[in-house]
Each structure stands twice: as structure tokens, then as C-alpha cells.
Image (cartoon, rainbow, N blue to C red):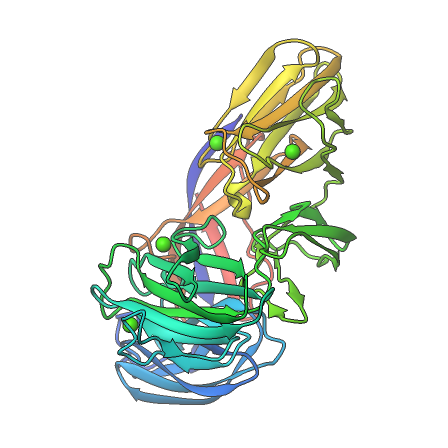
Length: 486
Ligand SMILES: [Ca+2]
Ligand SMILES: [Ca+2]
Ligand SMILES: [Ca+2]
Ligand SMILES: [Ca+2]
């Protein structure tokens, strides 16, 4: 792989608006943004939200990265707070919405705001004993706090055969290093399901059961080692909604209509017809709904230009391997511990492919290991992890013939939702441009003052091509130009 990194200095200049140059009283410090109170809300509602931070006295507007939230009222309280009214459309996408505050002198950090489908209920302490839980209706989002040594109990009524799901948003709210734990118990205090961490929702938990009989069921939420604090705020969605954990296939082509099988739900597999968006979106996912509700967060799904191949079991040998024609995306599931899957294709000497197994990148619990065999022969190349648990191999075809891709879990684990997608693509030149961090772990923001300039060092990584680069600032607002110098 040819990779060269170079640094280039760029100046973004705001021209033609010098008449609007900001006055000399502007402070140099950038605004900071700690977060919103509350941290989320139900779609289809309108509510007052406080945005807290610093240097907010000249706040002008809120910038959203996803559609669906409109600001109908905006008021600067003081340098530390802005009050805004959020109107959330009934069709607003669920889950994380990212926002910043723009002031006259800068742009703040990025913070999340979570949109849910269910009506909200506030936690009422004391609810720390199994014998004195907080009674809630089914299908609500409870907003609570997991304090130090705090255990929160909620009780719902269910009928035999009802699906009960509890999904917590805690670490995802981006407030503090909070590691939530959630469990569903029966009236005899027997734990029917629990979740500390889950590949789909990271340190947050999602647990589901099918009620074995009519009766009361208890949802427990706490910090995983009882070491919470007043900042350990959570939103727990409790209801009958679906909670699949993976999709098969785990990706598709832009604009394509295809059948997707959702895996890992307590009620079993579900097949749905899905139409994919026409434009690339690296954060794309599918929300599953039925008569009982909708999953609170997405099942991650890859968009690409590759045709799909689905594994055909049994596929454990080179002879019964699922056949495909390269380039393609091979999709499957390591459905039980110790399982492995084989895919076979024909290639010619001199061809070269990038072969990447997507598993953790689509929030599957699988830790994939990829091995390439000459069909009927020995292993040619293998990889376990490449920049994370997912596997990657650049494969230069040594001879005309058939080759087998073999995928398994690193620890021999498996299960109904251990999905993966092997993307096999011809080698294409690519380029990534980045801006170095101004502050460690904080995504940089370029705010160009009116009539002024902003200098930034861009880092470029070239893959599979060489030579100089010409940088142009395309699709910038009409009043902004970009010049670059090496
Ligand atoms: Ca509590
Ligand atoms: Ca956890
Ligand atoms: Ca399989
Ligand atoms: Ca791996």
C-alpha cells in the first residue's frame, strides 16, 4: 500500500463582506457548550431546552447536523446559558442529533440531543428497593439518575407473550463516563434478562424478554459497579417495541430495494422490504417498527456499490463454500460457537483486491478473523484485527484459479446476531484530508470571522497514488474563498 502524508497550509478567507466586519469588542475566546437540559425528548413535542456553557453572551443560533428539530424561540440568558424552544417533528429520526451553538464570535463544541418515540416519565425516588418500585405504564421513556450505590426499580404490567424491552441511553448521552446496567426481573425477583454492555449500544444496555405469564415485571437500572453519581443521567426506553440487534444482509446498494432479515429480536427473525437512500451516508441505519412500536436506535447498515451475496449453509468446506463473483459483498452470520463460513470465487493472476470484514463497524459482537485459501489447498493470507477488531487483507492474486474466504470469530464465539459483511473491492486510489486537533479529543471547528482569515494545517493521506495535490475549496458559501500553499 502506498501511503504518503504531507501537510499543507490553507487559508479560508471571508471576502466581500468587509462592511459587516465585527466590532473590536469581540472577545477572542471561543464559546463552550457543556450540554442541554433535558438531554432528550419525545418527537412530535415542543419543549424548552437550556443550553449551558461559557462565552454564550453573543449566541446567535443553534446549528443542527440532522433534520427534524426546529428552534421556535431563542433567548440568551447570560454568558453561561441560552434558553431555546425545540419543536421536534413527528417524523424526526430517532436517536442522536448533534448540535452546536453559533455565537457572533465563534462556534461551540458538538453535543448530542436524543429524540425518542415514547412519552417521557421522570424518575421518582425513592425507588431503590425491589419491594417499592416506581409504577410506570408500558411504552414510556424514563429519565433518571443512577447515583452512588443507587438502584432504580420500575414496575410494568404485561400479558403472557408480550415482548418487554428496556434500552438505556447513558454513555451515549455524552455527559460522563457512565456505564449503565439494565435487567428485567419477574415478581419472584428472578432475573429474566440483563445487559451490561452490548455491541449495538456499547456500554449502554438493551435487554428483552417475552413475558412467560400475565403479571408484573420489574426493570432495574443502575451503574454497573454501583459507582454512579449525580451526573449519571439516563434515558431508559421501556416497552413492547422491537429490538433487533443485526441485519442480514448488513448492507446494500444505493437506491436499491431489497429484503432484509432482522436478527436477534426476542420474538425472532423478521423480514422486511427496505428501500435504501440514493446518497452515501456512513452513519446509515435501519429502524424496525411493528404494531407495538419502533426500535429506539438503529441497526447499523452499510451503503456501497457492491452486489450482495448471501451465505448458503452448509458452507464449511471449500467444496460447499458459497460461490460469488468478485467484486461483491458476502453477508452471513456466525450463528453458533465454533461455526465458520466459506465463500469461493474465481480470480486471475495479477488481479488485486481489498478485502475487509465489517462486523464491529456495523456493531456486531463478532470479532472476525479472515483467512484466504487457494481452493483445495493451504492458507495464503490471514488477518485478525486491522485498526480495530475487524479484519482486512490486501490480496494480490498469485495464480489463475479459485480462492476461498474463510471467516470465524477470534474466540470461537457465535450467536444468532453475529452478523458480518465481507466487502471485496478492486483497489482504487483514495485520499483522506484531515484537520489536526486544536484541542485534544475535540473535533476542530473552523469559524472564519467576517472580513478576516483563518489558517489551518490540512493533513493529507494518499492511498495507491502519488504526486502533488491541488486543493480547491468547492461548494463554499459565496462569500468565502480558500487558498492553499505547501
Ligand atoms: Ca435513581
Ligand atoms: Ca454497561
Ligand atoms: Ca454461517
Ligand atoms: Ca478480529
